Amino acid sequence: MNTTILTVLLVGGAAAVLAFIAAGLLTAEASRRDLARRVQHAVRSDAVGTVKPRPTLGGLLVRTLQQFGQGIRDSALVSGAAAADLERAATGAGLNPRNAVPIALAVKVLLLVLCPILVFAATALMGVEGISRILSVVFAIAVGMLLPNWALGWARGSHQAALQRGLPDALDLLVVCTEAGLGLESAVDRVAFEMRGSDPSIASEFFALGQELRLTSDRASALSRFADRTQLETWQRLARTLAQTLRYGTPLGKALRSLAVEMRNDRLLRLEEKAAKLPALMTIPMILFFLPCLFIIVAGPAAIRILNAMQ
Image 1: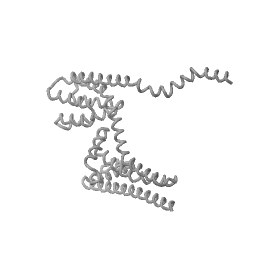
Image 2: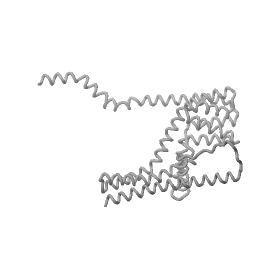
Image 3: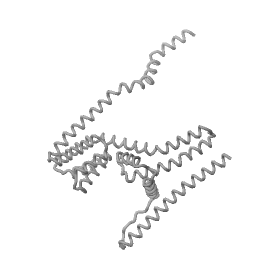
Protein backbone atom coordinates (compact mmCIF):
# COMPACT_ATOMS: atom_id res chain seq x y z
CA MET A 1 0.00 0.00 0.00
CA ASN A 2 2.82 2.35 0.87
CA THR A 3 4.54 1.54 -2.41
CA THR A 4 1.36 2.31 -4.35
CA ILE A 5 0.86 5.65 -2.59
CA LEU A 6 4.51 6.56 -3.12
CA THR A 7 4.31 5.70 -6.81
CA VAL A 8 1.17 7.79 -7.24
CA LEU A 9 2.76 10.75 -5.47
CA LEU A 10 5.94 10.55 -7.52
CA VAL A 11 4.10 10.22 -10.82
CA GLY A 12 1.68 13.02 -9.91
CA GLY A 13 4.45 15.36 -8.84
CA ALA A 14 6.53 14.66 -11.94
CA ALA A 15 3.48 15.12 -14.18
CA ALA A 16 2.62 18.42 -12.49
CA VAL A 17 6.16 19.73 -12.92
CA LEU A 18 6.32 18.67 -16.57
CA ALA A 19 2.88 20.15 -17.24
CA PHE A 20 3.93 23.44 -15.65
CA ILE A 21 7.14 23.61 -17.70
CA ALA A 22 5.35 22.68 -20.92
CA ALA A 23 2.58 25.22 -20.32
CA GLY A 24 5.13 27.94 -19.60
CA LEU A 25 7.16 27.12 -22.70
CA LEU A 26 4.08 27.02 -24.92
CA THR A 27 2.80 30.30 -23.48
CA ALA A 28 6.14 32.01 -24.03
CA GLU A 29 6.41 30.64 -27.57
CA ALA A 30 2.86 31.74 -28.41
CA SER A 31 3.42 35.24 -27.07
CA ARG A 32 6.68 35.50 -28.99
CA ARG A 33 5.04 34.47 -32.24
CA ASP A 34 2.15 36.86 -31.69
CA LEU A 35 4.56 39.71 -31.02
CA ALA A 36 6.57 38.85 -34.14
CA ARG A 37 3.42 38.89 -36.27
CA ARG A 38 2.38 42.27 -34.90
CA VAL A 39 5.83 43.76 -35.49
CA GLN A 40 5.88 42.47 -39.06
CA HIS A 41 2.41 43.84 -39.65
CA ALA A 42 3.38 47.26 -38.28
CA VAL A 43 6.75 47.61 -39.97
CA ARG A 44 6.23 45.58 -43.18
CA SER A 45 9.91 45.54 -43.95
CA ASP A 46 11.39 42.65 -45.94
CA ALA A 47 15.01 43.28 -45.06
CA VAL A 48 17.43 40.90 -46.73
CA GLY A 49 20.30 39.42 -44.76
CA THR A 50 18.85 40.02 -41.30
CA VAL A 51 19.33 37.17 -38.87
CA LYS A 52 16.59 36.49 -36.35
CA PRO A 53 17.81 35.21 -33.01
CA ARG A 54 16.56 31.73 -32.25
CA PRO A 55 14.97 31.33 -28.83
CA THR A 56 16.79 28.93 -26.55
CA LEU A 57 15.31 26.62 -23.95
CA GLY A 58 17.11 28.45 -21.16
CA GLY A 59 15.76 31.81 -22.28
CA LEU A 60 12.23 30.47 -22.52
CA LEU A 61 12.52 28.91 -19.07
CA VAL A 62 13.79 32.18 -17.57
CA ARG A 63 10.97 34.16 -19.16
CA THR A 64 8.47 31.59 -17.92
CA LEU A 65 9.83 31.90 -14.40
CA GLN A 66 9.66 35.69 -14.65
CA GLN A 67 6.03 35.62 -15.76
CA PHE A 68 5.10 33.12 -13.08
CA GLY A 69 6.95 35.07 -10.39
CA GLN A 70 5.42 38.36 -11.53
CA GLY A 71 1.99 36.83 -11.17
CA ILE A 72 2.85 35.72 -7.64
CA ARG A 73 4.18 39.18 -6.82
CA ASP A 74 1.05 40.89 -8.07
CA SER A 75 -1.16 38.57 -6.04
CA ALA A 76 -1.89 38.74 -2.33
CA LEU A 77 0.52 35.89 -1.53
CA VAL A 78 3.50 38.24 -1.14
CA SER A 79 3.38 41.23 1.17
CA GLY A 80 4.86 44.58 0.28
CA ALA A 81 7.51 44.33 3.00
CA ALA A 82 8.70 40.92 1.75
CA ALA A 83 8.88 42.18 -1.84
CA ALA A 84 10.78 45.28 -0.69
CA ASP A 85 13.28 43.11 1.20
CA LEU A 86 13.85 40.99 -1.89
CA GLU A 87 14.31 44.12 -4.00
CA ARG A 88 16.91 45.51 -1.59
CA ALA A 89 18.75 42.19 -1.54
CA ALA A 90 18.74 41.96 -5.34
CA THR A 91 19.89 45.57 -5.70
CA GLY A 92 22.68 45.02 -3.18
CA ALA A 93 23.76 41.92 -5.13
CA GLY A 94 24.16 43.94 -8.31
CA LEU A 95 21.08 42.41 -9.98
CA ASN A 96 18.15 44.06 -11.68
CA PRO A 97 15.29 43.78 -9.16
CA ARG A 98 12.66 43.80 -11.91
CA ASN A 99 14.05 40.50 -13.20
CA ALA A 100 15.60 38.96 -10.08
CA VAL A 101 12.66 39.32 -7.69
CA PRO A 102 10.07 37.49 -9.88
CA ILE A 103 12.57 34.70 -10.55
CA ALA A 104 13.32 34.40 -6.82
CA LEU A 105 9.61 34.21 -6.01
CA ALA A 106 8.99 31.59 -8.70
CA VAL A 107 11.93 29.48 -7.54
CA LYS A 108 10.73 29.78 -3.94
CA VAL A 109 7.27 28.47 -4.85
CA LEU A 110 8.71 25.61 -6.92
CA LEU A 111 11.07 24.61 -4.13
CA LEU A 112 8.23 24.89 -1.63
CA VAL A 113 6.33 22.30 -3.66
CA LEU A 114 9.15 20.04 -4.86
CA CYS A 115 11.31 19.80 -1.73
CA PRO A 116 8.61 18.23 0.51
CA ILE A 117 7.63 15.78 -2.25
CA LEU A 118 11.22 14.67 -2.80
CA VAL A 119 11.95 14.41 0.92
CA PHE A 120 8.74 12.45 1.52
CA ALA A 121 9.65 10.06 -1.29
CA ALA A 122 13.22 9.66 0.01
CA THR A 123 12.09 8.98 3.56
CA ALA A 124 9.52 6.47 2.29
CA LEU A 125 12.18 4.64 0.29
CA MET A 126 14.53 4.57 3.29
CA GLY A 127 11.79 3.30 5.57
CA VAL A 128 11.64 6.37 7.81
CA GLU A 129 8.24 6.76 9.44
CA GLY A 130 6.49 8.62 12.22
CA ILE A 131 7.75 11.86 13.68
CA SER A 132 11.06 11.62 11.80
CA ARG A 133 9.29 11.75 8.43
CA ILE A 134 7.14 14.69 9.56
CA LEU A 135 10.17 16.61 10.80
CA SER A 136 12.00 15.89 7.55
CA VAL A 137 9.12 17.24 5.48
CA VAL A 138 8.84 20.34 7.67
CA PHE A 139 12.58 20.92 7.32
CA ALA A 140 12.27 20.57 3.54
CA ILE A 141 9.50 23.17 3.51
CA ALA A 142 11.67 25.58 5.51
CA VAL A 143 14.61 25.01 3.17
CA GLY A 144 12.42 25.62 0.13
CA MET A 145 11.19 28.91 1.60
CA LEU A 146 14.56 30.21 2.77
CA LEU A 147 16.97 28.92 0.12
CA PRO A 148 16.32 31.75 -2.43
CA ASN A 149 16.78 34.32 0.35
CA TRP A 150 20.05 32.68 1.37
CA ALA A 151 21.22 32.67 -2.24
CA LEU A 152 20.42 36.37 -2.63
CA GLY A 153 22.12 37.13 0.69
CA TRP A 154 25.26 35.27 -0.38
CA ALA A 155 25.32 37.06 -3.75
CA ARG A 156 24.79 40.38 -2.00
CA GLY A 157 27.65 39.75 0.44
CA SER A 158 30.10 38.72 -2.28
CA HIS A 159 29.12 41.65 -4.50
CA GLN A 160 29.47 44.20 -1.71
CA ALA A 161 32.80 42.70 -0.63
CA ALA A 162 34.07 43.10 -4.19
CA LEU A 163 32.84 46.71 -4.28
CA GLN A 164 34.47 47.48 -0.94
CA ARG A 165 37.74 45.88 -1.97
CA GLY A 166 38.07 47.51 -5.38
CA LEU A 167 36.89 51.04 -4.63
CA PRO A 168 40.34 52.54 -3.76
CA ASP A 169 41.79 51.32 -7.07
CA ALA A 170 38.79 52.68 -8.95
CA LEU A 171 39.19 56.05 -7.22
CA ASP A 172 42.88 56.23 -8.19
CA LEU A 173 41.95 55.56 -11.80
CA LEU A 174 39.14 58.12 -11.59
CA VAL A 175 41.59 60.71 -10.24
CA VAL A 176 43.97 60.04 -13.15
CA CYS A 177 41.13 60.41 -15.66
CA THR A 178 39.79 63.66 -14.18
CA GLU A 179 43.27 65.22 -13.89
CA ALA A 180 43.90 64.26 -17.53
CA GLY A 181 41.05 66.58 -18.54
CA LEU A 182 38.11 64.21 -18.90
CA GLY A 183 34.67 65.19 -17.71
CA LEU A 184 32.79 63.28 -15.07
CA GLU A 185 30.78 61.15 -17.51
CA SER A 186 33.80 60.34 -19.66
CA ALA A 187 35.94 59.57 -16.60
CA VAL A 188 33.29 57.24 -15.17
CA ASP A 189 32.94 55.44 -18.51
CA ARG A 190 36.72 55.11 -18.77
CA VAL A 191 36.95 53.56 -15.31
CA ALA A 192 34.18 51.12 -16.20
CA PHE A 193 35.97 50.20 -19.43
CA GLU A 194 39.37 49.70 -17.82
CA MET A 195 38.08 47.64 -14.88
CA ARG A 196 35.68 45.37 -16.77
CA GLY A 197 38.21 42.55 -16.77
CA SER A 198 39.83 42.94 -13.34
CA ASP A 199 36.71 43.85 -11.32
CA PRO A 200 33.36 43.34 -13.10
CA SER A 201 31.36 44.49 -10.05
CA ILE A 202 33.06 47.90 -10.02
CA ALA A 203 32.76 48.16 -13.80
CA SER A 204 29.01 47.43 -13.77
CA GLU A 205 28.29 50.07 -11.11
CA PHE A 206 30.34 52.76 -12.84
CA PHE A 207 28.81 51.86 -16.21
CA ALA A 208 25.31 52.25 -14.77
CA LEU A 209 26.31 55.58 -13.21
CA GLY A 210 27.69 56.86 -16.52
CA GLN A 211 24.50 55.92 -18.36
CA GLU A 212 22.32 57.65 -15.78
CA LEU A 213 24.45 60.81 -15.83
CA ARG A 214 23.98 61.00 -19.60
CA LEU A 215 20.27 60.22 -19.61
CA THR A 216 19.10 62.51 -16.82
CA SER A 217 19.53 66.23 -16.27
CA ASP A 218 19.37 65.87 -12.49
CA ARG A 219 22.82 64.59 -11.61
CA ALA A 220 22.14 64.71 -7.88
CA SER A 221 19.32 62.17 -8.19
CA ALA A 222 21.53 59.94 -10.35
CA LEU A 223 24.27 60.01 -7.73
CA SER A 224 21.70 59.34 -5.00
CA ARG A 225 20.44 56.25 -6.85
CA PHE A 226 24.05 55.21 -7.33
CA ALA A 227 24.61 55.32 -3.57
CA ASP A 228 21.34 53.49 -2.85
CA ARG A 229 22.21 50.66 -5.26
CA THR A 230 25.50 49.82 -3.59
CA GLN A 231 24.19 50.15 0.00
CA LEU A 232 27.73 50.79 1.26
CA GLU A 233 28.91 53.71 3.38
CA THR A 234 32.09 54.22 1.35
CA TRP A 235 30.19 54.44 -1.92
CA GLN A 236 27.74 56.84 -0.32
CA ARG A 237 30.71 59.04 0.62
CA LEU A 238 31.84 58.92 -3.00
CA ALA A 239 28.37 59.93 -4.18
CA ARG A 240 28.23 62.81 -1.68
CA THR A 241 31.69 64.00 -2.75
CA LEU A 242 30.73 63.99 -6.42
CA ALA A 243 27.44 65.76 -5.65
CA GLN A 244 29.24 68.49 -3.67
CA THR A 245 31.80 69.07 -6.40
CA LEU A 246 29.04 69.41 -8.99
CA ARG A 247 26.99 71.71 -6.75
CA TYR A 248 29.71 74.07 -5.47
CA GLY A 249 32.18 73.83 -8.35
CA THR A 250 35.13 72.57 -6.28
CA PRO A 251 38.00 70.87 -8.14
CA LEU A 252 36.98 67.31 -8.85
CA GLY A 253 40.49 65.85 -8.97
CA LYS A 254 41.50 67.30 -5.61
CA ALA A 255 38.34 66.08 -3.88
CA LEU A 256 38.69 62.60 -5.36
CA ARG A 257 42.37 62.41 -4.42
CA SER A 258 41.64 63.20 -0.77
CA LEU A 259 38.80 60.68 -0.79
CA ALA A 260 41.09 58.04 -2.30
CA VAL A 261 43.62 58.62 0.48
CA GLU A 262 40.85 58.17 3.07
CA MET A 263 39.68 54.98 1.40
CA ARG A 264 43.17 53.50 1.40
CA ASN A 265 43.63 54.40 5.06
CA ASP A 266 40.32 52.73 5.87
CA ARG A 267 41.37 49.60 3.99
CA LEU A 268 44.70 49.57 5.84
CA LEU A 269 42.85 49.87 9.16
CA ARG A 270 40.60 46.95 8.24
CA LEU A 271 43.64 44.84 7.35
CA GLU A 272 45.31 45.75 10.64
CA GLU A 273 42.13 44.83 12.50
CA LYS A 274 42.04 41.44 10.80
CA ALA A 275 45.73 40.91 11.58
CA ALA A 276 45.10 41.74 15.25
CA LYS A 277 42.39 39.06 15.39
CA LEU A 278 44.66 36.33 14.01
CA PRO A 279 46.22 35.23 17.36
CA ALA A 280 42.80 34.62 18.86
CA LEU A 281 41.58 32.84 15.74
CA MET A 282 44.68 30.63 15.57
CA THR A 283 44.35 29.39 19.15
CA ILE A 284 41.87 26.58 18.44
CA PRO A 285 43.70 25.28 15.30
CA MET A 286 46.97 25.26 17.23
CA ILE A 287 45.41 23.31 20.10
CA LEU A 288 43.80 20.79 17.76
CA PHE A 289 46.55 20.29 15.17
CA PHE A 290 49.94 21.74 16.18
CA LEU A 291 50.23 20.87 19.87
CA PRO A 292 49.45 17.12 19.50
CA CYS A 293 52.13 16.82 16.82
CA LEU A 294 54.60 18.71 19.02
CA PHE A 295 53.86 16.45 21.98
CA ILE A 296 54.34 13.36 19.82
CA ILE A 297 57.69 14.62 18.51
CA VAL A 298 59.00 15.72 21.91
CA ALA A 299 57.63 13.03 24.20
CA GLY A 300 57.28 10.17 21.74
CA PRO A 301 60.85 8.77 21.92
CA ALA A 302 60.90 8.98 25.72
CA ALA A 303 57.53 7.19 25.94
CA ILE A 304 58.77 4.43 23.62
CA ARG A 305 61.91 3.92 25.73
CA ILE A 306 59.88 3.79 28.95
CA LEU A 307 57.54 1.16 27.47
CA ASN A 308 60.47 -0.91 26.24
CA ALA A 309 62.14 -0.71 29.67
CA MET A 310 58.93 -1.77 31.42
CA GLN A 311 58.55 -4.74 29.11
